[in-house]
Image 1 (tube, rainbow, N blue to C red):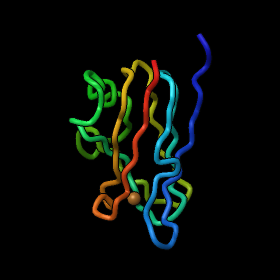
Image 2: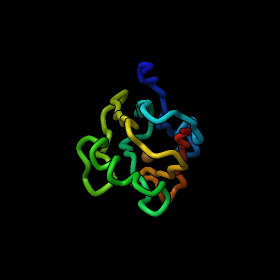
Image 3: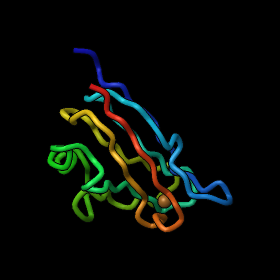
Length: 115
Ligand SMILES: [Cu+2]
């Protein structure tokens, strides 16, 4: 079995928009996604329960540290602080997620777990 690949996603305020960069990422089941608070925080990572594959909620509930609500990660407040999610055992498919503080400002993104 190969080692988990770590993918970086930046959480950014670019002066106009709040963004996850990249906003569309493909990973393999077993990979790790490391979200970085680059600017404009606090940010967090929260998944829509109806916009993830069947069975993914149970995996994410175990994989997401310090959830403040189901499928919603803690606030990442400190500049350069990171929040990591392992997708070990995660079912293939599209996962749509958002940043709770900036949802109304369009801070949404998706990732695809390839089988
Ligand atoms: Cu945000």
